[in-house]
Image (tube, rainbow, N blue to C red; front, side, top):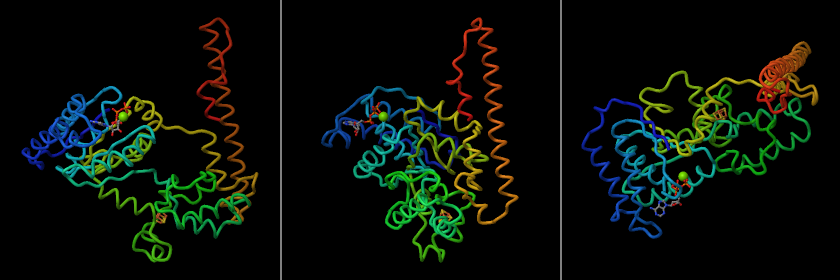
Length: 357
Ligand SMILES: Nc1ncnc2c1ncn2[C@@H]1O[C@H](COP(=O)(O)OP(=O)(O)OP(=O)(O)O)[C@@H](O)[C@H]1O
Ligand code: SF4
Ligand SMILES: [Mg+2]
């Protein structure tokens, strides 16, 4: 587990409040604490020590790295100080995990249990990427343009999404089973550049007839939340999308971050902070304009043959470019192999640049 607590203007926080908070965390995990009194809970000195170190680190606005064995109860050990500190200071605790299982454990089990037992009340929320939510306005538009955009099976899929969108409570992908066709979903999910809360957000006329926007609802909940749970992938893609960190914070204005399952951080961070482009990504974007196989796409609405022709040329150029890039990489690798191993052939199929195609 890694904790990052960015410096803020500490003068705002009463030192007595912070001192009381450290003592309180220690007591909660003590043999006489609220957990020990509860059924199924036992006093665990390692867990208490971890919680105490985290509490002290938070008051110092410092960083901490903890390694502790399985079964110590690490999640509780960081959740309790994080919640108490967030409530005492008005900051937001960001909890980032690698796996969906752990997110579900935190949201479905640990946080509700703590909400019922801790002496402070708090709000928590799960943050998912925007594209996880259906956009009611894009859904409506997709139907209006269905003839030009979708093949018959895709239209069936669109109808299934429509029926689900009328019943779902949170409007997110995890509530839609089986998973939708990616091509269709990408036409109806919430997208940053296309989002217009003034037209269809909370108090708009559109919301009155179509119900509130799922994504904007989640946004409001996030603003209120003391604890926000997300995954490492989203954390780093949000971090990469911000021009500069918010004042006194990392993702939000005043926040601190705890990474659980932190051993995967380096891999996830390097994938998301770096820049990458593949032939599949470019083709996916171009196929949204015009897909020669299905003869569908946004350009079919405009009936501009010249634009269709340009898209076709861009698709051909993409193939040529990536074929050439992979060929060049293969040749370089073969040259290196010959130098190092006296001509023994390289296994080119498993080389990372093959993922470019
Ligand atoms: N003091 C305790 N007494 C009894 N059960 C506890 C205690 N603390 C946590 N637990 C429970 O133990 C289970 C495992 O806790 P947790 O997931 O925090 O462990 P962990 O140390 O993170 O383990 P892992 O390394 O496997 O992730 C949870 O169901 C949690 O509710
Ligand atoms: S506010 Fe954004 S996500 Fe919500 S319905 Fe409107 S465009 Fe879609
Ligand atoms: Mg754990």
